[in-house]
Image (tube, rainbow, N blue to C red):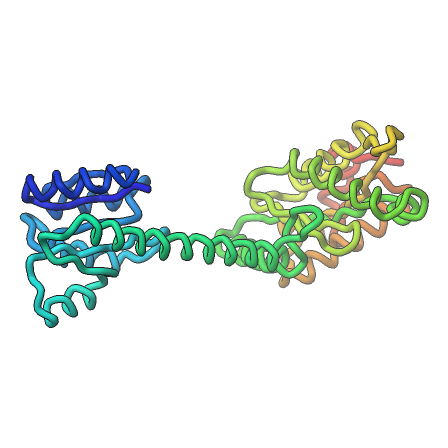
Length: 323
């Protein structure tokens, strides 16, 4: 672990560094408070800082106060170092945000013990952060596919819909449904069905833009949110997804290849002034229904009657699959 020692007295600084190095820590040195503050702002900042109270430019107390104002993660554990030993002064240091306090000159064994206490606290915090992140992922992502879950993808859609309205830009919405997925489950079992969902998700992800969002809408259905896409771009993106799935069979664990296809329904806010997220999703659902009824493995688009005359050659110009 990396430890910052900020001490303007050279002899004290060297002794602290030597004792900590013997314990196996990587020591970073600063000769004044300003230098210490700059080091603590770096991307690779030490997680433990031993700050002398009295230093030029910025004293240790000021560095500690600024550090706590900034907040954020990862947490930096601060040990304040001072010749001051009165209870009132110790309390002042702790109130400023210091985690521990050492009176100079400090014994090497006490220094080691205080630092180990800091390491234990930082390890506990790291475990808590990891647990929190695991819970966040669990709460927002679908465990099988790795895509956003239904609640989260609708939150993303609502946010992007509101942004598109503010910026007078367009947003595309695509609903995709794997064809004959029940037959796959019934014929090969649910474990194979899970494998097909995972591989299909991987292929979908590989052709999506970095800022697109995909969520598992339910079962074998997926909802895709395409910021900045008009109807033509949304259709093209849906076609990329469709062809990525049908491009080659998925090979099952027993070596058997299985062809997987997807039907997709598209809507986009530039075709009509949709007044809600629900209206956009409903339009995509209608288009998906038509794609299913027209033979599957195709992309369809909902065209409001008010703009049909402007896109009468839609299927030809977008090169949609006709059967």
